[in-house]
Amino acid sequence: MSKRFNQENLHYKLFAIASPIIVQNLVHYFQIQVDMAMLGRFNAQYLSAVGNVLYPYNIIISFLTALSAGATVMISHSVGARSLMGARRYAEVSFFFNILVSLPFFLILFLLANTLMTWMGTSEEINVYATQYMKYLSFSALFLGIELSFIAILQGVGKTRAIMVAAIIATIGNVFFDWVLIYGHLGFPVMGIKGAAVATSIANFMGMVYLIIAYIFTKRLPFKPTLAGIFNPSWRIQKRNVIVGLPYGLEAIFWTFGQIIIIRMLNEVSELSAGVYVLITRIQAITFFFYLGIARATMIMVGQEMGAGNRQGAFRVTFISLKYALGLCLIASTVFLIYPKELLSVFTSEQGMINESARLLNIVSITVFPVAVNVIIGNAIRGMKDTKWMFYTQSFGTLFTITVSATLLFVFKMDLKGVFITVLFDEFIRGFLNYKRFMWYVKAK
Picture 1 (cartoon, rainbow, N blue to C red):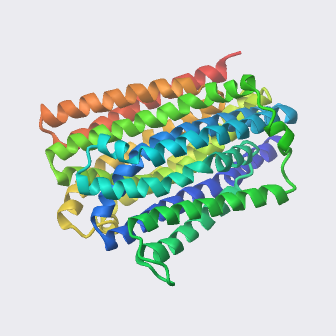
Picture 2: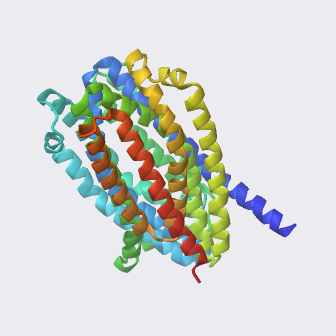
């Protein structure tokens, strides 16, 4: 009876943490799609400009996100070990350094926008638009450190509902301010792409303000940082956040770098190939967001179980999560196989792109399974504070995918099919390696 009760608690706790993260991811995805749709209706060149901005922007933001991820893991371990004072110190120190590094990141994006876009190889006209967008978007980075610090605390203790509400507020605000500032409604001037960037910065600021308010007034948190603690930083403590978090950021950067190289290679083959790859990636991202939410919850709960010295508890959490993720993949795979063209037509009306993409969804319908294993097991390993391992496997995966894709594209002339077959093998190889690493941790004394 006690065992059954504990298992039910695990299922409930997993979804209590995962559900808001899933909604947050989907809402953020919706925000990006609406943003792009509004810009595309105003000027088709804006889409290319924004697409070029997002790669360097996301790389820079990955460093801040990495510090936050490290703090999340350390806080969850401390909470599991019932060391609330230790958890509070990790949170306080993370606050100070996140705020400190936000300023130089803002200055890089604001002052070097034109230089960064030149490095991306954009045309002169696209460069003008992209530079405008990045300059105004850079203000989001100015207060991102504060937002990520609150997110690290809330995720570390397993209270993710406020994060979801903040994302919904930011999305609604972004859509409204896009309509007002891009097109010049309600007496505002027509700002075009600058308006979209201003709208995103305002919306993100609104989400951060909600997090602050929710954090101040909630009574369910086991600890709260103090101003005295925030302004009493300790590099010794922050070093642990960095050691755990930095490989997470580098992992994201390597993945983004790999995507840039693949898209550039496909652009050399044909514009259609690059477009199809981006289209399928957008569709696969929807399923990815579902089990990513489960994976983040896994990382938090595994961290708490490991902090409490309960390896078997970490094992149970991981395999419960894995079963749910694979169940979601089964549903997604079925849809990909039975309704490929209907699904693709939601994202594009171009028949050539739909026909080309439909045959590749057969490969993607298999790929989603090892991807889910990698995401769930990988986050469990991160929850054990071993983020370096995931960086190593992602580095291998990026180099493997670029090298083999290039060979199949340019030597064997396999076109997009070669790229997706390469991705499938990469996910299987890394899934096997990550599973073996996880089992080693579970069995270690």
